[in-house]
Length: 226
Image (cartoon, rainbow, N blue to C red; front, side):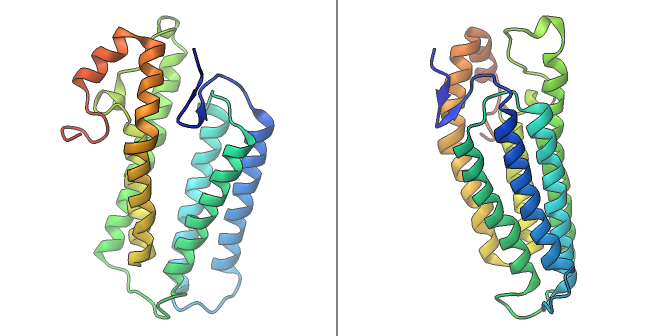
C-alpha cells in the first residue's frame, strides 16, 4: 500500500531532524514577530501588533506539541521548508497588517476583536484538543488497527482542520484588514479540495469497513452541514 497521499507521506516515522529544523525555523519567525512588536518601532497601531505577536506565540507553542508529541508520521525536509514559508507569510503578514503598515492608522479594539480572540481560542482547542484525545486513545490496547471516532471527532471527521479554519478566521479578525482574510479562505479551500480527499482515501484503505461506516454517518468538515 502506498503511504503518500496528496503530497504527504503518511508512513510512521520519528523524522526528528526535519521536525527540529522546522521548529527552529518557526521559532525564528516568532522571534521576528516579537521584535517587530516590542522592538521600539513606531507603528500606527503598536498595541494590536503586540496582540498579534501573542497569537504567534500561542500558535508556536501548539506547533511544538504537534511536532514532538502528536505527529507520528514522516515529515520530509521539503514539507517543513514549504510550511515555514507559509507560516512566515501569515504570522509576520498578520502582524504588519494589524500594526497599520498599509492603513497607516490604528483600529480601535471592539467587539470584532473579542470575537477574534474567542475564535482563536476555540479553534486552538478544537485542533489541539481533538488531536490530544486521539493521541490518548491510540495508547489504549484495543485501539490498534482501528480509526478513532470518539471525542470531538464524533462531530466531524476532520474537526482538527475545522479548528485551524476557525482559529485563522479569528486571527484575521485581529489583524483588522480585509487582506488578512485571504489566509483562512485559502486554508478552507485547501482543506476541502486538497487535503481531505486524499486523507480519506488513505484512511479508507488503512481501516476498511469501520472507517467507511464512520464516514457514512459523520460530517466531513462542519458538523451538521458538510
